[in-house]
Image 1 (cartoon, rainbow, N blue to C red):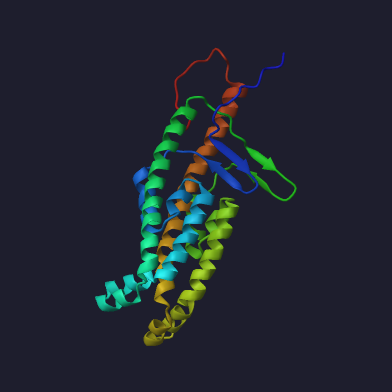
Image 2: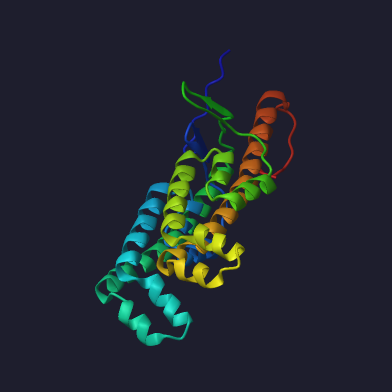
Length: 259
Protein backbone atom coordinates (compact mmCIF):
# COMPACT_ATOMS: atom_id res chain seq x y z
CA UNK A 1 0.00 0.00 0.00
CA UNK A 2 1.37 3.36 -1.01
CA UNK A 3 1.99 5.74 1.85
CA UNK A 4 0.52 9.20 1.35
CA UNK A 5 3.18 11.84 1.21
CA UNK A 6 2.99 14.17 4.18
CA UNK A 7 2.41 17.78 3.25
CA UNK A 8 4.68 20.29 4.94
CA UNK A 9 3.45 23.80 5.58
CA UNK A 10 6.91 25.29 6.13
CA UNK A 11 10.23 24.05 4.79
CA UNK A 12 13.38 24.61 6.76
CA UNK A 13 15.89 24.27 3.92
CA UNK A 14 16.09 24.51 0.14
CA UNK A 15 18.90 23.11 -1.97
CA UNK A 16 19.45 24.47 -5.49
CA UNK A 17 22.37 24.63 -7.89
CA UNK A 18 23.04 28.17 -6.65
CA UNK A 19 23.41 27.27 -2.99
CA UNK A 20 21.77 25.97 0.16
CA UNK A 21 19.30 28.24 1.91
CA UNK A 22 18.12 27.27 5.36
CA UNK A 23 16.58 28.65 8.53
CA UNK A 24 18.34 28.25 11.86
CA UNK A 25 18.34 30.12 15.20
CA UNK A 26 20.39 33.30 15.20
CA UNK A 27 21.16 36.00 17.74
CA UNK A 28 19.27 39.13 16.57
CA UNK A 29 21.75 41.43 18.30
CA UNK A 30 24.71 39.93 16.43
CA UNK A 31 22.85 40.22 13.12
CA UNK A 32 21.95 43.84 13.89
CA UNK A 33 25.57 44.63 14.83
CA UNK A 34 26.79 43.36 11.45
CA UNK A 35 24.27 45.72 9.85
CA UNK A 36 25.85 48.49 11.93
CA UNK A 37 29.28 47.71 10.48
CA UNK A 38 27.96 47.60 6.91
CA UNK A 39 24.29 47.78 5.83
CA UNK A 40 23.34 44.53 4.11
CA UNK A 41 25.69 42.23 5.99
CA UNK A 42 23.04 41.33 8.54
CA UNK A 43 20.67 40.31 5.74
CA UNK A 44 23.35 38.14 4.12
CA UNK A 45 23.62 36.24 7.42
CA UNK A 46 19.88 35.57 7.12
CA UNK A 47 20.30 34.32 3.52
CA UNK A 48 18.19 37.24 2.30
CA UNK A 49 20.56 37.89 -0.56
CA UNK A 50 18.56 40.22 -2.79
CA UNK A 51 17.82 42.64 0.04
CA UNK A 52 21.37 42.33 1.34
CA UNK A 53 22.98 42.97 -2.05
CA UNK A 54 20.69 45.95 -2.64
CA UNK A 55 21.64 47.52 0.71
CA UNK A 56 25.36 46.93 0.08
CA UNK A 57 25.21 48.58 -3.35
CA UNK A 58 23.27 51.49 -1.85
CA UNK A 59 25.83 51.85 0.96
CA UNK A 60 28.74 51.97 -1.47
CA UNK A 61 27.01 54.46 -3.79
CA UNK A 62 25.92 56.88 -1.06
CA UNK A 63 29.17 56.54 0.85
CA UNK A 64 31.17 57.42 -2.25
CA UNK A 65 28.97 60.40 -3.02
CA UNK A 66 29.04 61.73 0.54
CA UNK A 67 32.75 60.92 1.14
CA UNK A 68 31.73 59.55 4.52
CA UNK A 69 34.69 57.19 4.87
CA UNK A 70 37.18 59.94 4.11
CA UNK A 71 35.46 62.21 6.61
CA UNK A 72 35.71 59.46 9.23
CA UNK A 73 39.45 59.06 8.57
CA UNK A 74 40.03 62.78 9.11
CA UNK A 75 37.94 62.61 12.28
CA UNK A 76 40.09 59.74 13.61
CA UNK A 77 43.19 61.83 12.89
CA UNK A 78 41.73 64.80 14.77
CA UNK A 79 41.45 66.97 11.64
CA UNK A 80 37.84 67.97 12.22
CA UNK A 81 37.92 70.91 9.81
CA UNK A 82 38.93 68.62 6.93
CA UNK A 83 36.27 66.10 7.96
CA UNK A 84 33.60 68.78 7.66
CA UNK A 85 35.05 70.12 4.40
CA UNK A 86 35.01 66.83 2.46
CA UNK A 87 31.58 65.71 3.69
CA UNK A 88 28.70 66.13 1.23
CA UNK A 89 25.72 66.99 3.42
CA UNK A 90 23.10 66.29 0.74
CA UNK A 91 24.03 62.62 0.49
CA UNK A 92 24.64 62.17 4.21
CA UNK A 93 20.99 62.90 4.97
CA UNK A 94 20.00 60.30 2.37
CA UNK A 95 22.38 57.81 3.99
CA UNK A 96 21.00 57.95 7.54
CA UNK A 97 17.43 56.57 6.98
CA UNK A 98 18.62 53.55 4.96
CA UNK A 99 21.36 52.85 7.50
CA UNK A 100 18.86 52.80 10.37
CA UNK A 101 16.42 50.73 8.30
CA UNK A 102 19.07 48.07 7.64
CA UNK A 103 19.74 47.70 11.38
CA UNK A 104 16.06 47.60 12.32
CA UNK A 105 15.00 45.29 9.50
CA UNK A 106 17.78 42.77 10.12
CA UNK A 107 16.88 42.60 13.82
CA UNK A 108 13.14 42.29 13.09
CA UNK A 109 13.65 39.63 10.43
CA UNK A 110 15.93 37.58 12.70
CA UNK A 111 13.29 37.49 15.44
CA UNK A 112 10.61 36.43 12.94
CA UNK A 113 12.79 33.72 11.37
CA UNK A 114 13.64 32.36 14.82
CA UNK A 115 9.92 32.03 15.54
CA UNK A 116 9.35 30.32 12.19
CA UNK A 117 12.19 27.91 12.97
CA UNK A 118 10.60 26.93 16.28
CA UNK A 119 7.28 26.24 14.55
CA UNK A 120 8.89 24.35 11.68
CA UNK A 121 11.32 22.25 13.72
CA UNK A 122 8.47 20.61 15.64
CA UNK A 123 6.96 19.26 12.40
CA UNK A 124 10.18 17.46 11.36
CA UNK A 125 10.13 18.71 7.75
CA UNK A 126 12.00 16.64 5.13
CA UNK A 127 15.35 17.91 3.89
CA UNK A 128 16.70 17.44 0.38
CA UNK A 129 20.07 15.68 0.31
CA UNK A 130 21.14 16.47 -3.28
CA UNK A 131 20.06 18.31 -6.40
CA UNK A 132 21.44 17.38 -9.82
CA UNK A 133 21.07 19.68 -12.82
CA UNK A 134 22.75 19.74 -16.25
CA UNK A 135 25.25 22.47 -15.29
CA UNK A 136 25.73 22.00 -11.56
CA UNK A 137 25.36 19.64 -8.60
CA UNK A 138 24.74 20.66 -5.00
CA UNK A 139 24.44 18.42 -1.97
CA UNK A 140 24.44 18.53 1.81
CA UNK A 141 27.58 17.11 3.40
CA UNK A 142 29.98 17.86 6.22
CA UNK A 143 32.61 20.51 5.62
CA UNK A 144 35.49 21.76 7.75
CA UNK A 145 34.96 25.24 9.30
CA UNK A 146 38.73 25.77 9.55
CA UNK A 147 39.15 25.19 5.82
CA UNK A 148 36.32 27.63 5.09
CA UNK A 149 38.00 30.27 7.27
CA UNK A 150 41.39 29.55 5.65
CA UNK A 151 40.09 30.30 2.14
CA UNK A 152 38.25 33.41 3.36
CA UNK A 153 41.51 34.61 4.89
CA UNK A 154 43.08 34.35 1.45
CA UNK A 155 40.49 36.21 -0.62
CA UNK A 156 36.93 37.00 0.53
CA UNK A 157 34.49 34.93 -1.51
CA UNK A 158 36.49 31.71 -1.69
CA UNK A 159 34.93 30.48 1.53
CA UNK A 160 31.48 30.91 -0.04
CA UNK A 161 32.61 28.90 -3.06
CA UNK A 162 33.75 26.15 -0.72
CA UNK A 163 30.23 26.14 0.78
CA UNK A 164 28.63 26.28 -2.69
CA UNK A 165 27.03 29.70 -2.09
CA UNK A 166 27.42 30.73 -5.73
CA UNK A 167 25.57 34.07 -5.82
CA UNK A 168 27.17 35.26 -2.61
CA UNK A 169 30.63 34.16 -3.75
CA UNK A 170 30.38 35.97 -7.11
CA UNK A 171 29.12 39.17 -5.47
CA UNK A 172 31.82 39.14 -2.77
CA UNK A 173 34.60 38.43 -5.28
CA UNK A 174 33.49 41.32 -7.48
CA UNK A 175 33.26 43.76 -4.54
CA UNK A 176 36.65 42.59 -3.28
CA UNK A 177 38.27 43.30 -6.65
CA UNK A 178 36.64 46.76 -6.75
CA UNK A 179 37.71 47.67 -3.20
CA UNK A 180 41.28 46.43 -3.69
CA UNK A 181 41.61 48.10 -7.09
CA UNK A 182 40.49 51.56 -6.01
CA UNK A 183 42.06 51.52 -2.54
CA UNK A 184 45.50 50.56 -4.00
CA UNK A 185 46.05 48.40 -0.92
CA UNK A 186 48.12 45.79 -2.80
CA UNK A 187 50.48 48.45 -4.13
CA UNK A 188 50.69 49.95 -0.63
CA UNK A 189 51.65 46.56 0.82
CA UNK A 190 54.26 46.18 -1.94
CA UNK A 191 55.92 49.51 -1.08
CA UNK A 192 55.69 48.72 2.63
CA UNK A 193 57.56 45.44 2.11
CA UNK A 194 60.25 47.39 0.26
CA UNK A 195 60.57 49.69 3.27
CA UNK A 196 59.12 52.73 1.48
CA UNK A 197 56.62 53.72 4.17
CA UNK A 198 55.92 57.21 2.84
CA UNK A 199 55.11 55.95 -0.66
CA UNK A 200 52.97 53.18 0.85
CA UNK A 201 50.96 55.75 2.82
CA UNK A 202 50.60 58.26 -0.02
CA UNK A 203 49.31 55.74 -2.57
CA UNK A 204 46.43 54.56 -0.38
CA UNK A 205 42.95 55.81 -1.20
CA UNK A 206 41.46 56.22 2.26
CA UNK A 207 37.87 56.48 1.03
CA UNK A 208 38.00 53.00 -0.52
CA UNK A 209 40.35 51.50 2.07
CA UNK A 210 37.82 51.76 4.90
CA UNK A 211 35.51 49.26 3.17
CA UNK A 212 38.02 46.42 3.42
CA UNK A 213 38.13 45.64 7.17
CA UNK A 214 34.38 45.06 7.46
CA UNK A 215 34.32 43.05 4.21
CA UNK A 216 37.26 40.90 5.28
CA UNK A 217 36.16 40.08 8.83
CA UNK A 218 32.51 39.62 7.91
CA UNK A 219 33.35 36.97 5.33
CA UNK A 220 35.49 35.09 7.84
CA UNK A 221 32.63 35.11 10.35
CA UNK A 222 29.96 34.27 7.77
CA UNK A 223 31.81 31.31 6.26
CA UNK A 224 32.60 29.85 9.68
CA UNK A 225 29.00 30.22 10.87
CA UNK A 226 27.51 28.84 7.66
CA UNK A 227 29.85 25.85 7.72
CA UNK A 228 28.82 24.97 11.27
CA UNK A 229 25.11 25.32 10.45
CA UNK A 230 25.56 23.41 7.18
CA UNK A 231 27.01 20.52 9.19
CA UNK A 232 24.00 20.62 11.52
CA UNK A 233 21.73 20.48 8.47
CA UNK A 234 23.63 17.44 7.21
CA UNK A 235 23.20 15.71 10.60
CA UNK A 236 19.48 16.55 10.62
CA UNK A 237 18.98 15.10 7.12
CA UNK A 238 20.79 11.90 8.10
CA UNK A 239 18.76 11.62 11.28
CA UNK A 240 15.42 12.09 9.53
CA UNK A 241 16.36 9.55 6.86
CA UNK A 242 17.24 6.90 9.44
CA UNK A 243 14.10 7.58 11.49
CA UNK A 244 11.78 7.43 8.47
CA UNK A 245 13.33 4.34 6.90
CA UNK A 246 14.75 2.20 9.71
CA UNK A 247 13.17 3.16 13.02
CA UNK A 248 10.32 0.96 14.20
CA UNK A 249 6.98 2.72 14.56
CA UNK A 250 6.69 1.14 18.01
CA UNK A 251 9.87 2.78 19.25
CA UNK A 252 9.13 5.99 21.12
CA UNK A 253 11.72 8.35 22.54
CA UNK A 254 12.05 12.04 23.11
CA UNK A 255 14.81 13.93 21.32
CA UNK A 256 15.50 17.23 19.66
CA UNK A 257 15.28 17.39 15.88
CA UNK A 258 18.79 18.82 15.47
CA UNK A 259 21.67 17.86 17.70
